[in-house]
View 1 (cartoon, rainbow, N blue to C red):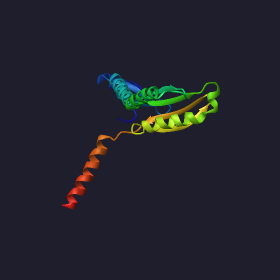
View 2: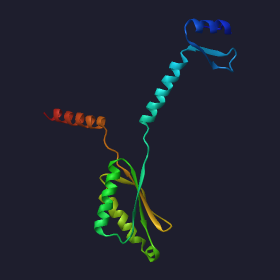
View 3: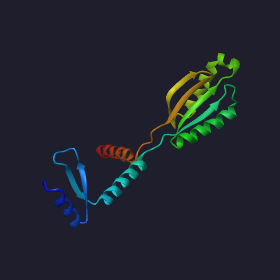
View 4: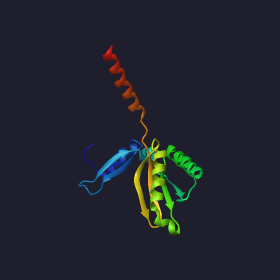
Length: 166
């Protein structure tokens, strides 16, 4: 539109039933736009909502074990870990040592490694077992599942290999 006076710009915006919005006040001369401000704000809010929907929140679940845990109890805890990993949550596994148990941290290592082997198809170790005071802590994350596009690409590659053999 070019450089126009403020009165003329306001008149033009009023005739078009739109708003005069100042874009850059520091510029010489100031830069303004003629637009429907309500519609603009509405579109901005929609964009923010879409961004929030696409955003994933990382959930960390914690499982606490003792070094003298029985096999059946450990299997129950493993089921809980598998359920959490299937839902996409990270799992923090803590082995809590009491009293003289702290002298036998090797039992905690074995316990955590056994648990990691049990759930290796669902999760991978993000941080290996570390002693933190009286606790030994390990963090598991869910393994990334193949997306639809990855499966289709794999099928296409397989079908091409078959067609070449014929």
